Structures are given as structure tokens and as C-alpha cells.
Length: 130
Image (cartoon, rainbow, N blue to C red; front, side, top):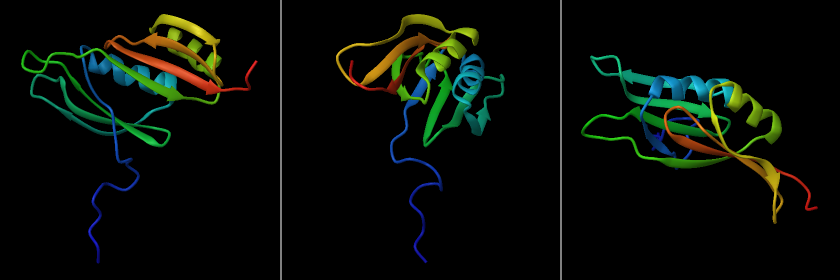
């Protein structure tokens, strides 16, 4: 029998976010993208040492920033079925608008929202060219 080289249901490449507020980021991902918690490992002080969230076909990994591993600003692009509705959920979940959804020179209508942990989420839906 061949031993699997990655966990079942995991993609080959996963973004790894080191954020300033992991609990807020977890809640944001659940509220905005219907993310499912896969694994959460906590440090003795209660901060997130390692977490894994499933968003559609992708696993996003994250941890709480520490003095040894400071938070790193990140940008993540994500396709959703309705960019406008997702953008509104992101704002309702405490996100800060970076750019309202709009279509520019390609087939994507996209907008940007920054979550409380410092990650900017570029939310997009492919639409027809104008």
C-alpha cells in the first residue's frame, strides 16, 4: 500500500499567515468565507500556535504572531461566487475596505478587505468583459 504524502482533502500549496489577532482572523474566515476549522493547536497562554482552515478547495494555515515570529502583512486572492455579497459579509465581520468591488480591464470583478489580523483579502468573481 502506498502511503499518502499529504492529508486527504489538502491542496499542495497553502498560504501560511502569521497574524496579530488569530482568534479574530478565525472568526472572520468563518463569517465571510464559511471556512471550516480543521486543526487548532494552542500555546499554554491560549494564543494560536498553528491553525488550519478549509475554504472551498484550499487549506489556509495561520498562527498568532509572537516576539520571535512577528506578524507579516499578507495579501490573499480568493474567488467566490458573489463578490458583492462576500465583500458586504467581510465588512459586517469587521473588515476594513481597501477597495469596493469593481471591474477593471479583465474578467474579474474584485474588491479588497483587510481583516483584524492584518491580512488583505482580494475577493473576486469572474464575470464577462464589459
